[in-house]
Image 1 (tube, rainbow, N blue to C red):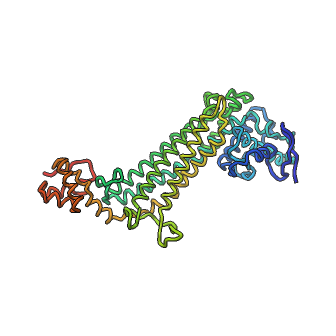
Image 2: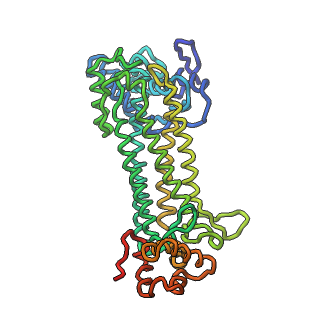
Image 3: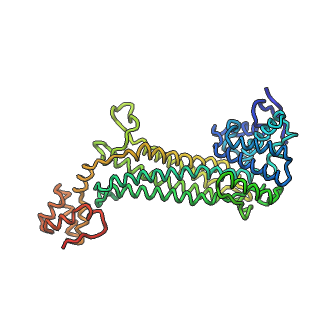
Length: 465
């Protein structure tokens, strides 16, 4: 069964059972690109924006009460997720998101008609543009809904980063007294505690959570009421103020209308900044994941310092092999987020004149970055970091034989003598301690003080008197 709907370009059949209409059908025909659906958080935000606008229009005396109440109820149901399956448009599309906005307008109009006891498609009673889109434009609805959706998603992602930081911090405490070789340039450096290494992982991860929350604050400035180009044509000021006030109340975000709506309609610097913070966090996590892969390499022919939790068999041909799959996952998520950030940057710079028409691809990539970073941080903590074990004997064995401990001798026997001792130790395989004693550089009791772990892992020179 079909119904025939008309728009300014002509007529098309629309399946009788769907709530969307002709412009959504055109979008399905025009943009069969990714095969992906809209982010559910975006659909929810669209429902809230349409609900707030309808309520504000009613209060301003612009929208008839009977129609307005039906639109409010329909929009509320959209926000609740009841009609997610009625949003089939591709997230990447031309038109700056017009197809997304019209998809919402049509679903809400047809549901409102149903609430009023009218058949779908009776747009002479409730019209997608005239009533549902009253006082609005795609150019202020889509950016506003996008920011609300992004704020909704960023909170859990920042929480996930903080959870991962807490996992690293617990491991830092657990590994606090385990001595290991520090490395620079992938070569032996001076000793350190494994807990110090994991403490650094905790701090950088926590900083990224804090920076992400700070960057997201600018998203609370919205351009609702700007309509087409920021001049507010067809949007009474009292309507826009009230709509933003309602959205602030319903979302729990500190939303406010931009002081300069032309600026807010042209520019996307706030989402770009968020994308940059997501990229920075992904880079740090990727570095940490690579560190863990190196330290857990082996188990026989690698560094063999850590044991990562075995979460799946590692090979279809080599029995018993277990791979660091969770760390590899983090690397790949970081690659994707870096690519997404590049797309966001390209979209931002190609928003000519009064509107960034590249919003759909910017939103699609930024939504994905937020989602996969949060998901990855959660599973990395649960499936990897929480279960890491240290091979303490191996770590201490290597640390005690590391020629990098010659560095602690510099203030007492001089750099050249310390370098000669290190070279001889490396060439002969003798422990550094034995070489120092053989040459009589320091007495045994003083050398034992210097080589205590706490004196090797601190910037404070030991007292030898």
